[in-house]
Amino acid sequence: MPRTTHIFCASTLYGAATLAAALDAGMFEPADRRLLLITNNAANPETTVSVDRMPGFERLRERFDGVLSWNETIAPFHPGGWSPRADDIPMWERYVRLLWGLGDDHIRLAVESVQVNPSLALCQLFTGAPVDVYADGLISYGPTRDKIDPLVGTRIGRLLHLDLVPGLTPLLLTEFGVRPELVPTEVFLKVLEELADGEAALPGTGDTRPALLLGQYLSALGILSDAEEEELHLGMVRGAVALGHRRLVFKPHPVAPARWSRLLEDEASRLGAELTLLDHPVLAEVAFQRMRPALVVGCFSTALLTAAGLYDLPVARIGTDTVLARLTPYQNSNRVPVTIADALLPELGDRKAVTDWAMPTPERVDELSALLKAVGFAMQPKIYPGLRPDAERYLSRQLNPHTWRYFKRRRLTSLALPGAVPAQLSFIPRNATVRRLARRARALRQSAKR
Image 1 (cartoon, rainbow, N blue to C red):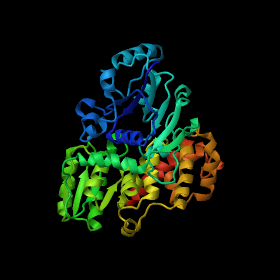
Image 2: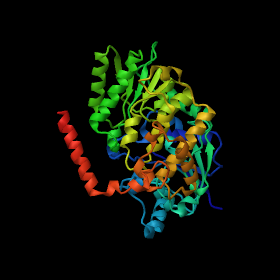
Image 3: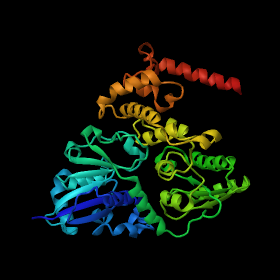
Image 4: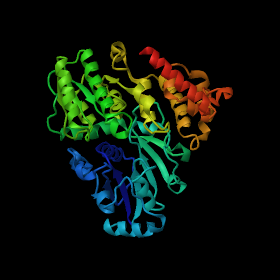
């Protein structure tokens, strides 16, 4: 009888820790072998530290019978851009089975972000293998960002996810009836404790708890310009100091320019504070455990919700209004994490909101769920046509000057949803004469101001 081999795919240490927690919780059935497949999806993998070389990974390795590299397997192709051609799948499967010593094993897969490569390529390679998907943060509360081939989607049995917003149910993959399952929080925290125990001393630990500032490198995603992201980080420093914090720690994105850190250090010094750079690869959650920061500041990082929900730390957001306005196209998958952060978390400049904030009540979670169904339908109406009544209900009752930030009038118009441009005025955006007169009026107004 053939062996059963379970292949777990991970591109981040956070993902590997989630898999380890699910294994510890007994969420996967027994297998003859468990292999961890590491994939480095960075734009330049050669210059970026892969998961299996990050501090703390050795604590996770013992849960697996072997560690493989997807980058090495498909070299010289890039993991994010390669998938097997349909006619080549049998050849590639034979090659991979030979290279990894799989023989005629029955394969089960556990992957993240199944709608894109490399996870999608792996699912296509092992035709017929059952698939589990584990969530990569707040994006799981939003819609699947691309239509998945039914030959893959119908093989997905579960979506494993952390309880980042208690009471909120993921929308991801519900078009295939995939059932969500919670990875127990207490088990995940124990895995993170293992990583923290193996970590060297971190800056900012001491008698005074620092404010931890989280960088995301949004300019690399084309959401903000370099100058705008610099200003966003400077706003974190100013906001934290305005709230009374004098010890700051900045955790930059691993590939963010070094000059940003120097600008922040200079700004902190000017304001009478001290800023320390956390410049080696470490999970934000490990920093939460080791530092116990007095405040965690970010834009829409998943770490803000783990800080608040898993570690009971004060949190604050900054810049979400700008990001919501800049995200294009509307179906950009970052829209849901930004929406959640903006709707739930206190704004850094509002001292009272930051001081009084607490995890949302069930009523607020219900409100957020209704909002996300409306946003999810507007993002992917062809994948989730059944959400139209929910979207119409929300938009007809809840659309106001505050909630307008989560929608675009042009998008609502194209979908014939409440809030759309009235039919009798719908010709205006397409009318060249009206647009020319509008440009002339704006030019005259600007001249008058000068």
